[in-house]
Amino acid sequence: MVAAVRARRARAWIARRTRRGPSARLTAPGAPGSRRRLAPALLLTLGLAGGCTVGPNFTRPAAPTVTGYEREAIALPAPGGVDPAQRFVDGGAVARQWWQLFRSPALDELIELAMAGSPTLASARATLAEAEEVVTAARGAYYPQADFAASGSRQRINQLSGSSSLVSNRSADSGSLVTSMFSVGLAMTYTPDLFGHNRRFVEQQAAIAENQAYQLGAAYLALTADVVTQALTIASTLAQIQAVNDIIAADEHNLDLVREAFAAGSVARTDVLSAESQLAGDRTLRPPLDQQRSVAQHALSVLVGTSPGEWTPPDFSLESLTLPGELPVTVPSELVHGRPDILSAEAQLHAASAAIGVATAQLYPSLTLSPAWALEAVSTGGPLAASSVLTAVAASLAGPIYHGGALRAQQRGAVDAYVAQLGVYRQAVLQAFGQVADVLRALQHDADLLGAARAALTASEASLQLSQEAYAAGRGSLLLVLDAQRLYAQAVLAYARAKGQRYLDTALLFEAMGGDWRAWSEARTRPGEPAVTARP
Image 1: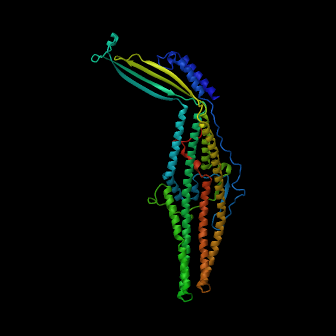
Image 2 (image 1 turned 90 degrees about the horizontal axis):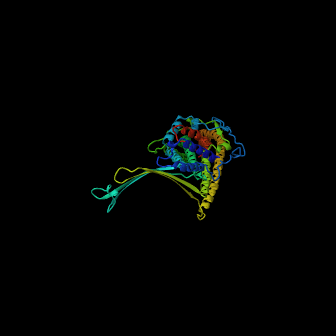
Image 3 (image 1 turned 30 degrees about the vertical axis):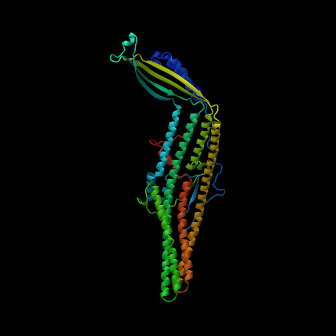
């Protein structure tokens, strides 16, 4: 159908040019009849340009039929106490710049620094731009290739004997004849896409560029999520450090009580040593947390594109952050079209499908047309002789006959590559669903753990206070105090970890839902920004 339309347009164009008379010739004067010779060639060229396209047409995989990430519904219990409750919003969309839900200006500023200075994001942008240029270059095969050519030569012929006509052109001092030849012209080459080799190749390159666009989206999503995660890690670590400081303070208070009792002669020296041992043991909890905080700070420095020696990120605290109360949960059928890693695998599957068409087209003949125009002039020592225009149209047809089975093997290999990529795509979908299910369950368990940790902290704190008061009054033993102190230390740390983990898993849910990469990608492809075309 497309070929017929193009052929009709070509016939109409040639008819219009023919009716305009001698002044509308297709070539320069001096080439009589060239219009009649070129018309069939142009008609053939334009007609064949709409040839068939071999190979499979890509169809994106169907959306999954599952309606949930687990067979049982997942609900978030209220942790109780001062800790806020959260709830899932089925079918909700992730907010633009979702990290602003934590209500931290310092975190917002950190994201802006990372967006401006991240080498990973800059590299992904450049890789996408390169892929888009490859698509543009591949589309050049749709059009004729024209080259300008010019040549000149000068030849001196020694005259041993000659006619009187040659004597007139003979140099007076050397008795030789000088001949000069000049040629300037235009050479064109065009290969009609008879069986869609070029179209499939452009389709393949466009799918590769589309993959790079999704890779850029994935880099943006990973960058923003990593910055938020490291900031929350610092906040959680500082909460645990504060808990350890409280434990150490309680140990020091215990040691003061024991020393007072020892000075009064009511306890033995072993009690003092036990209290000192408890204090020394709890002090070992601090260095690993300091190291964890340093690692998170260094990671943030790298994420914003600086070295740890050049810049130190600010400290964050859980108290300065707001825990988002509504958590969007995208249904599985929409998640596969919302996560950049899944879309990247789909684009690679599209490229593998187009590669089958490229390999299949190589099994069919190819036609090459080569029209050329040249203006030539010759001089034999005097003024230039009358110029002449040379017009030529050449065509060559080549088709495979025997290649030792290589072309068929390439086609079968392309099919195998498609099957392999289909498995990669399915695995990417399954991993995404598994990640979402893990995060949803983690948030549920975080709420349960936080409620239990809060209850344990309240009970252990009361028990420690009573045991310390009893020991100070001489009614209890140091063993009970140390046991209460151990339970209190465990409860304090457990509560701090559970509270921080809840923030971290909340950020992981936003990442698992795909974040806001699509809105960011659409914003960067506004006028003035390069945009990738997914289809040829």
